Length: 245
Ligand SMILES: NC(=O)c1ccc[n+]([C@@H]2O[C@H](COP(=O)([O-])OP(=O)(O)OC[C@H]3O[C@@H](n4cnc5c(N)ncnc54)[C@H](OP(=O)(O)O)[C@@H]3O)[C@@H](O)[C@H]2O)c1
Image (tube, rainbow, N blue to C red; front, side, top):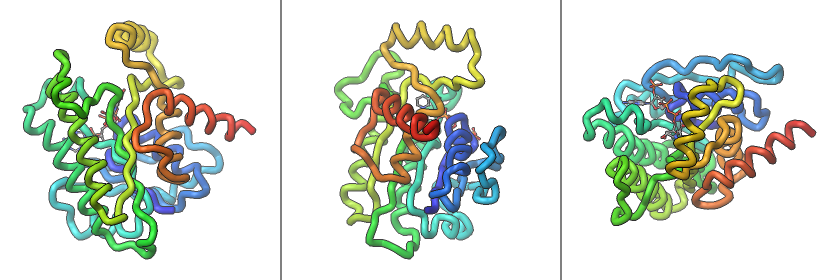
């Protein structure tokens, strides 16, 4: 299967690419980002780095013909491109909204139009949001309210797009809490995350489990419309057990 990963240069994107290159069921990984997608470090022995094609996109609201060609025949897309809350504070709000919302919807439109050999099955679109993103605009929280409602709006727009896509797109929203890298963790950052997690009641999930959950939806099929942190823990640990068997 051919997988497109948008936002492949980022923290989660690199782990998704690392796991995808190790999966025999994935024959091609197209990493779309504003800069080159590196071949991940610490690839497993069975990984095939040649499956990765790095595609640098200059304009996320107007794909070049080359970018469109790379979308052809994709079976699934994992969408990780967004401005995260910590980075959003240093950017104009309109820019944050454009990257998170407009780029995603434009990407979905292009993916739904991309030529595919087998149009009998929809393209699986796995959108990564956040545990606290809120789809109900009347429930705007006092902290990061505008951001949280905007990410909820993206979730709703992605699901609506899929429902009206005439079977071109099947969508799933994955909502991680704080994502922790168990292998390269920083003690102070982890301690800070633990405090924040208990104060604002957002769980910590592990990077490996998040990437494994995203890939399971893309490869094996979408389990349900929205996956929460408990689902990420469950699917992530079942994948670990499968690997250890
Ligand atoms: N990290 C967490 O703890 C966490 C928790 C919950 C949810 N999430 C969600 O998971 C997703 C991925 O997060 P992440 O931690 O991997 O974030 P990240 O490291 O900042 O990566 C985000 C991706 O988006 C790209 N991007 C950011 N601003 C852009 C812009 N203006 N134009 C084009 N591309 C842009 C980044 O490109 P560059 O690499 O060039 O910057 C990168 O490819 C996001 O939706 C995030 O909200 C993350």
